[in-house]
Length: 322
Ligand SMILES: [Zn+2]
Ligand SMILES: [Zn+2]
Image (cartoon, rainbow, N blue to C red):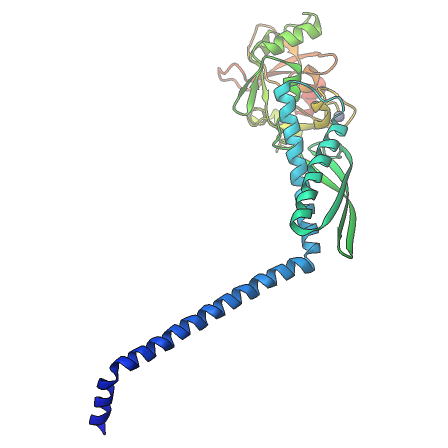
C-alpha cells in the first residue's frame, strides 16, 4: 500500500503541482476581491458620513476658521498700509468689507465641496475692552437639504504679533532693524515741525521703537522703575494699555491719539545731548497733537547711549519712576 501511494505520487507529480497552483491562484483572487470589497465599503462609509450629518461638523469647522481668516485680513491690510504709506479713511468699514469678501470666497468653496449653502455677513468691526483685541461680529446661516442653522457671534481677534502701522504713516524715511524701527533723521524732523523748533529734538536722531505689537508682561506698570525692568521692557518692545494711546484700528488710520481705550509704547532716543529735557518718549505724546517735554531718566549707568528716556510726571508715576 505504502509502495503504491509513493508510486501514485511520483506518477501524478505534475497534476498535483498544477492543482496546488490553481488553489493558490483562486485564494489570491479571493483575497484580492475581499480587499477591494472592504475598501469600497470604507469609502462608501466615508461618503455617507459626510452626506449625513456632518452638517454640524462642517459648521464647527467653518466657525473655527473665521477668526483665522479675519486675522489674515487684518494683517494683510496693515502690511498694505505700511507698504503704500497710505492710511485707511475708515478702517472699520474697510475691514468689514474685506472680511466679507474673504468669507464669500470661502462660502463658494464650501458649496463646491459639501453642497452646503452659507450666507455670511460681517455686521461690525469694533474695539474690545482689551485694546490688544479687535471684535468682529458676524451673522452666519448654513443650509443643506432640509437642515439649517443660524448664528450671530463676536470673535475676538488679537493684534499681538501684528505690525504697528503708525510710525510708517507719521515718518517717511525709517528703517526696519529686526523687530525694531530706526527713525534715522525722520523723527527729529517730524518733531521739529510739530514744535516749531522750540524744544531740543536732537536726541531723537536714530530713535527706535518696536515694529510688532507685544503686550508688556510686567503687568504692574509701576514696577518698570526698579530692577532694570524698563530696559527689559524696551528691549522686548512691549506695549502698555493706555487711555491716551491710540487703538490698533485708529493706528491704521494714522492717528496718534483716539477716543478709544488703546495702548502706548516707548520711543527711545538715540543720541544723548547736553540737554536734560526733550519730548516725552511715549508714542502717543510724540505722534499726538501737541508733543510736550519731559525730564531725562537714565535707565542704565553703562556707556550705551540709548539707555535713557524722557518722561513727564504723569508717565513717571505710571511706570514707577516717582
Ligand atoms: Zn513694559
Ligand atoms: Zn481708536
